[in-house]
Image (cartoon, rainbow, N blue to C red):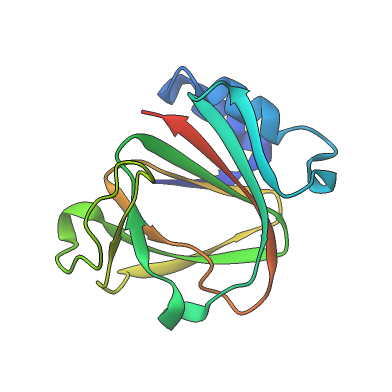
Length: 148
């Protein structure tokens, strides 16, 4: 997992060959004006999901993990409270892995919580279980999906 501000995003482009186009998309000045939906960046290898989401609170946010895609989660406006736990420590599956949705959910409790505020981001790799939208306020966010 990585947590940082967008001004530092280019420091991470060497971690994965597809991070550069992902961060170039996130650096667009008018990104807040994009409509909710999916935006293809590099075909199915990198795409963005932009949504206005209502937070669920800590008790309503479930840990999730992905196998095929890395998540880069960005608060475009507002802030998102996110829980974290290493996938290797998750023991209580809520769902089986869904290959089509590339997601598995857990009923485990997060080890810790952190906020991503406007213009900050978190990168979640397949070994990182995360519980987004755990705050109390609505948030406009982008989730960039980068194929592993």
